[in-house]
Figure 1 (cartoon, rainbow, N blue to C red):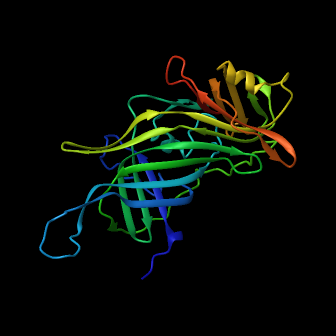
Figure 2 (cartoon, helix red, strand yellow; figure 1 turned 30 degrees about the horizontal axis):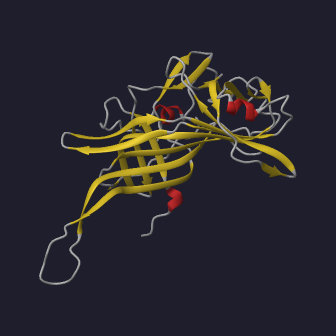
Figure 3 (cartoon, helix red, strand yellow; figure 1 turned 135 degrees about the vertical axis):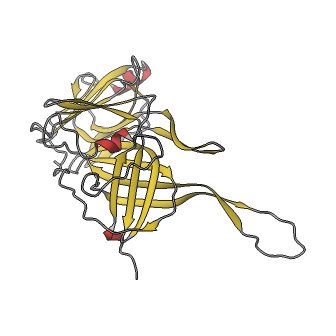
Length: 310
């Protein structure tokens, strides 16, 4: 019997111990995603390269097997201030800390050590893939006239898939998103200047290293290179001068606020973002736009950006 791709179920839960199955359930840990892509057996094929007295293939040996899973999740709050969103565990699996202030806020920020990991289940019809020790990276994408998304790319340890009974996933914790527009996105400033924004992306830039050694098999986050890319409508240089900021290697704050009702307000703060040189100008509807690139710079460390839900 053929398996229907649209039957897929995705579950994810934080592991208490790295690489030990956290056994996520469809009732508590289901993920509402789109554009799911799955590579179940990433790795290498090592040829035996035997010298024989005849011509012909020799086969190969698969090594360093791991799984890669990517998908999008809508960027939206939980509906209640101080309650983590349903996608919270996914962010934690990307080298990000979650700080909860009950009834008030949930704050995410990058961390350099103590990275958490996920057990991820991916099921199509009855075929279930269990991916343990999962870690990854994420890009926050807020583009005008579109739904805001978290774009995740995860890597985890391979296990042989099995046939399992299907459960009915509970996706009720995922709220309806708000499109990015003038009404729903009331604040966007760079260096304290309000700019007209077409698109904004914050890339966590995590470097993911699968390690397969005697005594250790793991997926590590070994480095991070955060970056911001945003397209804005150009203004006169007296109002905002990206050329001068880039020449001066200036570090400027960025604030983006999306959402207008408590429980669904999302704010991205980058306290120190170094302006990079402009690599071009863009024409959109015969209006000149600047494609700006900025590099978030840590201050005390692990504070180059925050994502706050209120």
